[in-house]
Image 1 (spheres, rainbow, N blue to C red):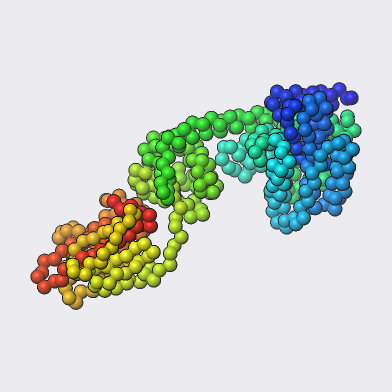
Image 2: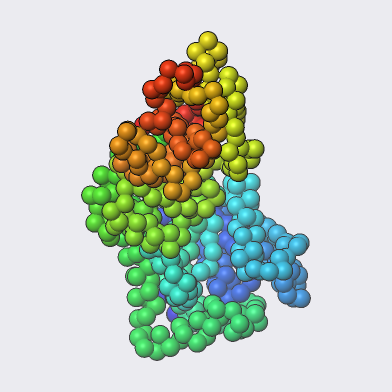
Length: 476
């Protein structure tokens, strides 16, 4: 055996034993494409299996993207049969026409997952190597992202109830070719890896070789950079998770954190807090936060405004409402007949404004018997109207004003700010108006000075507005 190949195998096995993924009880499934990388990995595993005695199986994905793919699959099936290796073949029957690289990867790992679970393997191994690591980190930096993405390829991570291992990350492509030549290993070359229309190929053939010329230790430095990023992210997440679990409250329909927690953080701490927070709540939201959204959120945190909202997508909203930061899913808009034009209020007749909102004005002897459950609330006040006076219910509009006292006339928007009414509550408020759009009531918050009776010829009515807290939001 060639000395360099022997040293390669020894280093591979020694690292596997030290890291704990090569052991007598391991059940390893290795992904083999037929290229030099995976054939070297398979050869090393076959040697390790003879020494250690673990279970070893091979999986090959025929993507049907090249005319020779069926021949390559047949060769690997024969190779595994001759070497007494369990062989799993999966064929991509309907290859994607667009986004092929992403779709192919998704298909591969879906099938890997199925085999690992069905055949009770505990480890999947792939042949990613040091040059792949350099290419991946460069691609991540070019495309941008959060800190964790710059770590590139991880050597070990959870997968299908077991683990995914990339044991060749410390070896270069040149070492793999040298090993294959020394051991006279057969392998297939994929000509598509030479096409410079693909970004990874451009980095592989034009950039990575130049970096290696600049410094022969470049690959090792990239690998160390990857490890440092992974450690930094683990450290940040450990500390940030503690803060999140301590202060995060799960309500019936929204999550909340006291604003003082956010306010106490420095800008750089807020960045890591938020990106960890959105990862933490991903099982609930299924929203992948974008870097631009984090930037917008950080900018908003620097503002003095006590209220703001940011749309995160998929109807999820993060909202500051004075002393609380909320995360909730916006309900689908319900189409009603009352949203576009004011609706006239007929005395002693109920109006259903939505699925959980009712409003009306009643004489004292005609008050409805509205029963309330634990989520129901009623807003009510007296109204004194002349016989010819008509009123309408409408949504608030920009510029609306309300007469609060004999001398105080205030914009509704200013009233909301002064009373610290949340954005969601403002949006769901109603106004009771007359023909001249004078406000008689701001529902369900306050009644106008116009509602107060001063003349004996006016009729006494009572305004009732019934709503459910989960539909409207708690009123303050």
